Image (tube, rainbow, N blue to C red):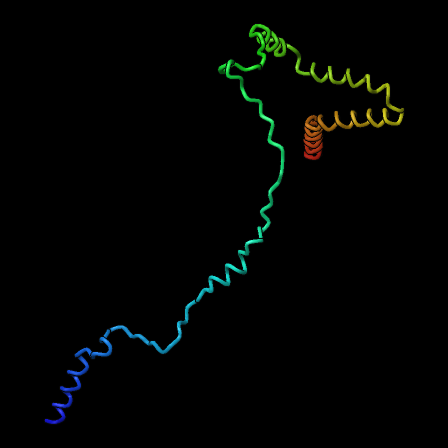
Length: 160
């Protein structure tokens, strides 16, 4: 029975809180050092935020952007001059009646005045360029013609 009494005594000791330290279900090892990150905030402040350092924030002295403030007297009116609706309408209808190439013809006629100032070599290069440009933009017709020729050649081969 002595064993049972001693076992009961030990059980009582384990269940009862000791006056030195309360019994807890969590394990606390006070002997081990903390393994987490410790920040030395004063060192960080001294290293990365010294009082005399501005980290590239530079003050740029520039003049103010000019801005024309509206007059208080005008109250919404602007200085933009409009066009008479009748004039605008006639100009719009006039441009739609013109031939589609008239604008380019006008440009080319103005360009001829500049041709007088060119040397013969420059004039020859310019005319060569115009010819190549017109051939390039007529490429659709060249492809169409090539397809017709290929179709004729295939028909002749089928006949043979």
